[in-house]
Image (cartoon, rainbow over all chains, first blue to last red; front, side, top):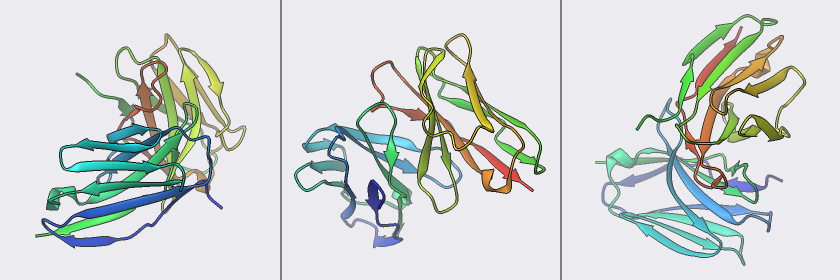
Length: 109
Length: 114
């Protein structure tokens, strides 16, 4: 069993939809939870990070962490075609990041 | 400011040859990380540097892989006697000391072993 599980998708939604992306994990030592966006043939881009449980909002993006359920989410409001990319969750207990395999998101006009 | 840069962007090599991949971190970032991304796989941690020392090499897949960092800046990942299963995108990231939760990635080096 992988430490971090993420549905690979693809997830296809119309422009303007609310998108929900999720990851589950098994290591209760994880303290930091990150979301990265990766466009094709580019390096991952950090969207946001959260420490421990709770919510964090940045513009159209909201990250949620539920440590009791070992479940994290990223919500994208008013999705745009430019949001089409692969979204990677990542977690850490130390300095190295453990990544999910990524969810491919397609937002069509 | 300038982000993390990596070179070359693409590398095609024959099986059995050695390759060197280079990473230039963001200026002032003392922590540097190497990851590997294979087709259909997530990013896999390889090694972490704090300054010039590597406190965590746990992800290096075999003794054919090595890395060094000099002057607390540029790092080189070397793969000796390359195998076809080494084909992947090799990604470098950097962060401020103690802020491993805020890693910034370079564009990667796409390695193809024929």
